[in-house]
Image (cartoon, rainbow, N blue to C red):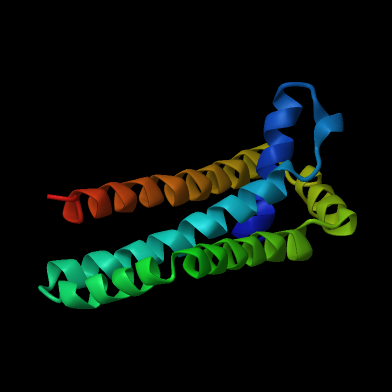
Length: 146
């Protein structure tokens, strides 16, 4: 079972603990989309940090000035790209058959294995957004307006 299917299982695992298993649905797929977006934005932010720390900030400022010059187009492109990533997560993991087959596999496992899978998915999701927040904070610190 891959980490993304484990996120589906994490949603079921948490809802089962709360006795709300009827609410299992697309919430887990939202987590997959959010994790993918955080990972992509972390990579882009790491790109900016790399050039800033290696005294090549002109590359960063050129990129940012081009984005600033085309503000509306840049924002639209970013929104469209992030929406495509999010929709890709729904296309791959959001259909009922995928969710049901993943949950059937998960339910058939031993409780220790279920807990391990849920824990690994939780670690992946939490690490994704914490890294995004750290990279965002570093970018704000490095590129703060003087």
